[in-house]
Length: 432
Ligand code: CMC
Image (tube, rainbow, N blue to C red; front, side, top):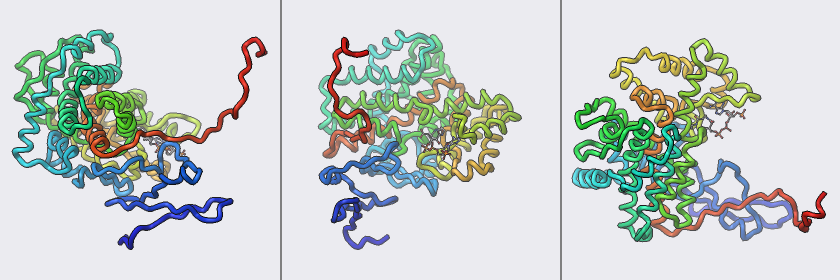
C-alpha cells in the first residue's frame, strides 16, 4: 500500500475518553507493526504469550512470508542461494548484507580456515563427559567454554572485536561438532585441514581415521546445503534467546550457548531427531494411519514431527530443497529403497491429503527430510541438532552483531500477574 505519511492506530479503552494513538511502523516487506512502546506510560502492558503477534526488534537480515512459503536472506530467495551459492558465502551475506566480490569471498574463506582449530582447554574438556552424554549438552558446554577462553580483552563495542567473534564462532562450530561426535565414538580429536572446504572439513574431522579419508563430493555438497538451509530464520526461539541474552551485554559466546540450549527442544531444532524417533516408533507403513489418527486426537499429545510451523502456513521452502538433497544423497549411496525414506514419503503423502492437516495448514518443515538425509550420511540421530547448531550459528551471531552494533535496550518483558495479593508472613510455629 502506498504511504500517505505517518499513520496511527487508535486504541479505545473502556473508561477512557480519548483513544491512545499508537504509531504504525511500515516494514520494507510484510506486516505493518503497531509501536506499542508508549503504552506503559498510559498505564497498560500488552499480553501475547508465545509472542504470536509481537515483533521484538527491527532487523534487516531475513524475511519470511509464511503464507507464500518465501524465505529471503538479505533479499535473496533461499532456493537461489541453495542452488547457486555456498555456506561460506551465505555467512558473509548474512553478516555483511551483500554478496562478497571474488576477492572478499577468498579472504573471508581464508579467515574462517585460520580460525578452525579450538583451544586445548576446550578439547580437554570434552573428555570429562561420559561417552553417552547427549551431544547437545556437550555443545552447550563447549560453547560456554569458548566464552571463558575468549573473554579476556573482548570489547563488544569495538567492531573489529565483534567481527572476530563472528568469524571464530562460525569457524569453530563444526570443529566442536566433530569433537563431540568423536568423543561419543571414543575417537581422538582430529585437527582441521586447511585445504578442505567448510563442509568437506566437517566430514573429514568427523569421520576420518587418517589423512587418507576420501570425501564424497555429493555428500559434501549435501552437507553444505544442510548448513545453508539452517543458516537463519529470523526471530525464532533460539535467535530470540541469543538476542535476549546478548541484550544484557553478556559475552557473545555465552549468548550463543544460550541459543544452543533453546534450539535443543523438540518444538524447535530437536524436531529432526524427533522425526527419526517417530519413524522408528511407527515401525512400518501399515501403522501410519493409526499414528495420523493419534495426531488428530486432541486428547493425545502425539504430533507428526517435522510437520507444522509457527510462521509457515504453506510448504516450508527449505523442505522442498531438503527433499531434493535427500533424494540426491540416497541415489548417490544407492539406498533409495530405504524403508525409512519410503515411510517418510508415505507419511508425507497421507498427511498432505488429510482434512485435518489441510485445515490447520500443516506442511512438512525443514526437519522432516533433514533427519533422514543425515542418517543416510552416517550422522547418528542424537547429533542431528548439533548439525542444525552448526548451520544456525551465522544467523545467531549475525542477529547478535546487528543488535549490539546500534543502540539497544536490555530485553525485559513484563507480565500479567495473577498470583497472591500482598499478605503477611506467618512464622513456622504458627502454621498448621
Ligand atoms: N501434528 C499434529 N497436529 C499439529 C501439529 C503436528 N505436527 N502441529 C500443530 N498441530 C495442531 C495443533 O494441535 C493445534 O491444533 P488445535 O488448533 O486443534 O489446538 C494447531 O495445529 C496449531 O498448533 P500450535 O501448536 O498452536 O501451533 P504453534 O505455531 O504454536 O506450533 C510447532 C508450531 C512447530 C511447534 C508445531 O507445529 C509442532 O509442534 N510441530 C511438530 C514439531 C516440529 O516439527 N517442529 C519443528 C519446527 S521447524 C524447525 C524450527 O524452526 O526449529
